[in-house]
Amino acid sequence: MLPSRLEPLIISQVYWKQKKAFQLAEDVYVEWVLFAVSEGRFSYRIGEAEGVAGFGDLVLCPPHTPFARTVREPLSFHFYRFIWQTAGISETPLALPARISLMDHSRLRSTYSCLEKLSAQPADDARLARAGHYLKDLWLSACIEAEQGDRQQRAGETDAAIEAAASSIRRLAFGQVALKRISGELGLSPVQFTRRFQAVYGQSPMQFLTSLRLEKAQTLLLETSLTLEQIAEQCGYDNGFYFSRMFTRKMNVTPSAFRKSHRI
Image 1 (cartoon, rainbow, N blue to C red):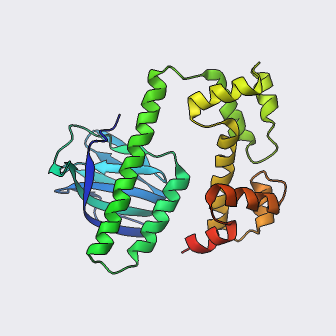
Image 2 (cartoon, rainbow, N blue to C red):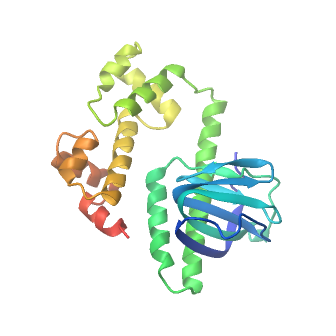
């Protein structure tokens, strides 16, 4: 579990877009630093920890620790320098993972979009304060997801049959998915299936399926010029009208407005 009592206090924030290489293959910082990757991938080595980070990953490096890094794919990321505090008092955590992977990609895309727009504003105290707000939001999301994961593990909710069902939903998500047939293959009634799925994943099978479809839809809206009808077809919806209605209901914005407001 991550120490949610801690709160990051921002020192500076910079947005780097489509960086093809780091000027320094290795650096050492006097404060904590965070690389929040919005696009591309890079490999890193921080102390004894090493790996590859991409979208959804937060890479943390403690002060006075060599941070080696190499761009694997053109990299866009938010670079934070900060310190930790508890109730306004500076604190140094005993240990934190070098990489934290966030699973709520819809919320993350929204946060990154706001940060990218913020980077175009004048570098003043108001801008820094807003960037600090988003840093705290990233940390809070990480703490909440870690707590949920720990709670599931303690409760012994790992369920091989439900995990297999989730894999089937992922595989079939963008075509015709018959959730009733999947529950029948497990020998469960729809109610039993939903209850067990909710216990493991924190959402119903239909919510899980919808989140997969809408995540892909957001990507297609931002990265392609496909029509709503074409996006609907690629995301498993029968037509553009139904897709638009579902997207608007879940995201509180129409697909067209989402595309217009988030594209840079």
